[in-house]
Image 1 (cartoon, helix red, strand yellow):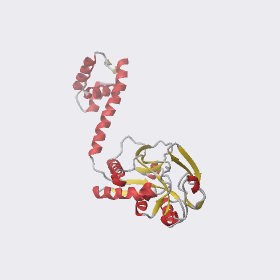
Image 2 (cartoon, rainbow, N blue to C red):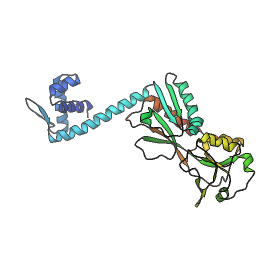
Image 3 (cartoon, helix red, strand yellow):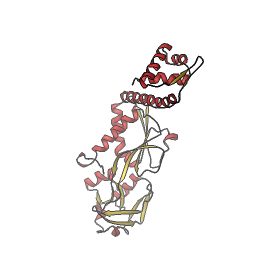
Image 4 (cartoon, rainbow, N blue to C red):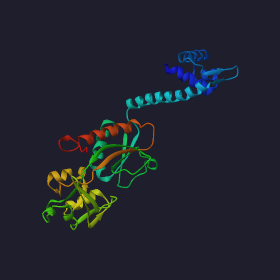
Length: 302
């Protein structure tokens, strides 16, 4: 099927005239008439009723016209996507990310992106409050945890585990073999979470729910890490924030045989048909970095 013939036919229906359709397309009336006639011959049916004053679609023509519009739009979208994929990132890329994941994972990718595309400026906003992408003028946001229902477009790029941890010195002050043994210990509550005190542990089919008692409450995850590192108590922190601390022995993973819920890492976008090259290239680099992160370069995928 010749897509040009579909375009000519759709233009005639929209314009109601071969002459006006030819003017819109920038070609001669004879070419439009010839190509539409060939289309009708190929299909074996009449699509247009021609009079001296107007051209109207038949019933079959109206149905075919609606399908043609979809086909032509899809073809246009395909060309636009290819053109955008080939284009270099330009302008200003505005990103929103939470403090913890933004500092540990997004900032290195932003630096690499800026080095690769020096003509594209990057503005990174870090904070634990959820930013409205449309009113905030953001191109993409990174969300960590569990997404609420939203009209925004989202893509999961990875997962993370949560660990109950404490400072190495603090770990020597108590013994725990069951999750319930932790309930009465000093705990640093992360108030950036929806439920900072109630934690569900699992080991195989065995599940235990423990409510911790906060001795300190802090509303920023990096600050919770700082408090735990100094021996203020236990807390639950994401693997991407404590990996180096655990490897260096500054923090201890408490009850490692018990698992806490695994969360997701998402890129979230304003509703749009296409995303500009600056967004797609940055997300590609972030996905690659996420896949390569972790012991042995195996990432954190669950």
